[in-house]
Structure formats: structure tokens, C-alpha cells
Image (cartoon, helix red, strand yellow):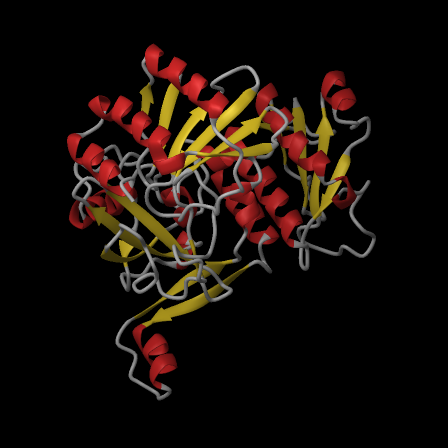
Amino acid sequence: MLRITADVFSGRPDPSWIIADEAEARATLRELTKERSLLTEAAPATAGLGFRGLRVEALTDELATDFGLDAPAFLPGGAGAPGRVRELTERLIGLIGKAEAAAPEGEAEALPVDTALQDFLAAQAERTSRVTATDGVAAEAQAEAGEALPVEASCPIELGAFNPGFWNNDPNIRARNNCYNYASNKRTDSFAQPGRGCGNIYKAITCAEVTRASLCDGLKRRFNCFPDSEKPRYLVALVVAPGPGFVDFHWYRRHKEGFWGHKPGGTAARNTDNSNRVIHNPETCNRGPYTQFCGYFYTCRSQRIR
Amino acid sequence: MEVELDIYSGRENPRVPLPAAEAEALASALASLPDAAAAAEPEALGYRGLVIAAPSAAIASLRIRGGRVAITDAAGAVAWREDAGRRLERRLIEAIAPSLDPALAAYLREATSR
């Protein structure tokens, strides 16, 4: 078993969650201990208020021995944390969904370990890796035309950093998460399919039907805005390979660096197209057999995905 | 032994059992393939080749595409062999074709004809 504690509060007890699944605990520790140089004994003295990092403790002697964790390890987080630290932090916070709550020392009851906590910690940890922006027709047209245009439609969205390592470094994560997982930025290890989350999976691979299934999962068409309570709201694009013979769908996600990323099935996440060019526009990039551009959508925090 | 058709992005890749006779023929063919230079990574979207996991105790995986065979051992080292005229690749596609959608099989034949 593994206990993870978020070093985040000042007055109240910090939240902890326990990973009881041995395989999950071992996989997590394998990733963490590959990067021992990133681990410390405690938060830096200058860490300050807010999210300072995650403390990881092995709760069995086997895990402690096998991974050299006789004492708790600390993964410092917060503002300015390097990309790999953010990836590991994201992974540990993501385990909340598979964890049970742990009562802090001296406390009778554990703090709830739920989606709300996960979202809170993710927001704290990702303060510098994700930005809120305006997705607007005028904004993009203005950039292209070089002149001011009236705003016809706009919505607030989140643009996350390009973190391919999160999806690529672990062969199991890479193999079990597809384009839909990547675009949604939700790892499910189930090779997620549009509509399966809401119980009404697509019945054909056409723009109309995959769109229907995605909207059923909770996505919205572009410029149909989500409120702030649904952060993060990623801008994604859907394309379809209509056949004959080769029939499939594919998704892209916009990143804060200005380009689009994608993950073709079980292959590596990347920001380049079939011509090996960085993707600045999913409508015009080289998409191979995915010749039909279906449209843009927003994902949301409450999106059902399976 | 199972052949994975590494082709899709959203959908799961088809995985088709290889008939025993074809599995034996594959082992025999591998032994006689000449060495080759490494091939470039396949394009991300579209047909990316045939993958066979653990075809033998010594081989972790095979990837067959575009006239090349990548043989990965248990330590992760990759050795390359030439599949002249994509003969091995086309033979495997014909072996798994009966288990595929006919339109997909036709697509693969066309894609590997060049």
C-alpha cells in the first residue's frame, strides 16, 4: 500500500489518500523512483502558502525495501515546477479516483477524497501549466487579418501545456489510452470511446454519429460555452476517416504553446502531423486518411468518458 | 500467436489469431531474412504495420511494414531485417484477411501493393 499526502494547507490537516492496489502502487513507485533527483525529504523552506507538493510513503516493508523508500519521499510542486515534476504530480493526483481516504495523524476522520479534492489539487498544481484564454472567432480572424473585427462568438477555454511524457513514458498508459483520452486529457486506461461514458456509444463512424456520442458524453460544440465550474474546458477537434476500407475517428487538442497535440491510438502523443510538421491548424494539417473535418468542441470537467 | 493490425487511432486495432501453419512459416521466414538498415517511423495516422507480440521466447515483438521487419528482443534492442517486395507482410495480410472486414482487407492489399 502507498499513502500520498498533499502538502497544501496551513491551518487544517492535509488530505491523504491510500493506494491499496499493489500493482498500481508498484507502477507508481517505479515511475517516481526513476526520477530520484526530483524527490526531496520535505518541502523547501521557501515553499510558502498553497500547494507545496506531495509526500509519498510506502506502507508495507516490501514496497519500502523494493523501492528504497524507508523514509517518506517528497515531490515538490507548485509554481515553477519543471515539466516532469508536473507530470508526476498529475499522475499522483490522478490516483485519487482509485484511492481510499486516509485520516491524518491525530484525526479521527479522513477528509473526503473525491473528485472535488482532485480538481482542487489539480488546479493548485497546474497553476503555471494551464491558462485560461478566450476562444473567439474575432480573435483568430483578427490574428490572420491583422485588423480589429467585431466579436461574433467567444467562450473561455483552458489551454494546457504539452506534456507528452505523461502519455508516452509508461508503455501501459501509452497502449491503453487513445486520441479521445488525450483530447479530453483524461486517462482511463480503457481506450475510451465516444458515447461509452454516457451509455450510448456511437453506432457508426460518421461525423454526425461520433458527434452525437461525444455530445452525449458531455462535450459541447464550439462557442456553446461552459461555465467556469466546468474547468478545464479544452478546445478539441474531431476528424473522421470515412473509408472505404479505412474507417475511424481521431481527435486533436489545442495547447497553450499555440499548437495542437494528438495521440494516434496506442502510439505516442505528439504535436506533429503525417508530414512531421507541427500542427497549427487541424483543418489543414496532413491527417492521412482522416479526410473529413467534423468540427470543434469543448471538453469539460464533468465529461463522462470510458 | 496473434497479429495486431496497427492502424487505428480511435478504434481498437484488430487482433487476429495466426493459423499455426502460418506461424511456422513466419518463424522459418524470419530466420532467412537478410539484415537491413533501420526504417523510418511510420506515419502517425493510417496503416502503421503488423505487430506480433512474443512470437518466440527470444523475441518480445515483431513489427512488419514497408519492406522492413523490426525484431525487438526482451532487453528492448531492435534488429532490422529486409522483407523484400513486402512478401512477408503481404503473406500475413492474406493470412488474416478472412477475419477482417472485406473492405479493410482490400484497403490493406492496396496499401501494401506499393
